[in-house]
Image (cartoon, rainbow, N blue to C red):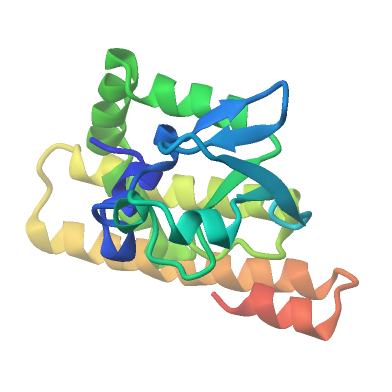
Length: 200
């Protein structure tokens, strides 16, 4: 299983192009060394993305014999470095360990199905709700799911009875949505935020 960056590097315009791992970072001089031995220096600061773009002279890049394998950009190769790049690299390395792979398999078995079922109760709607409202939503969602599990693991009741109970649970979920709406209406939120929250 590959992480997101590795997956993206093998798709589209990045396929067959040198990955950023092939560029050596010189911490002392704050620059990258490309496979051809040229330096990429910090030129563009992006505060919103918390990153710095390292670029090489267009003249050097266009004259390089490795360019077809390095970039398809007319302005030359760019390397993006996050302000916390070292931590990101440690996490990526950790994600490839045997323990991490076991955790991913456990998550797929225990959690993914639960997440998928929870979406019908508004689980995917979280923007602008703030933590305390989201906690209310998730506690109620968990309660509904636990009730369904109890119904499914009972003493084999008649099928018609199970369906009737599940319909009641579904109706209860809509009542929970209404309760969340009432909570939101009591809060001092702007119209735009309120609209975003109520879109469940």
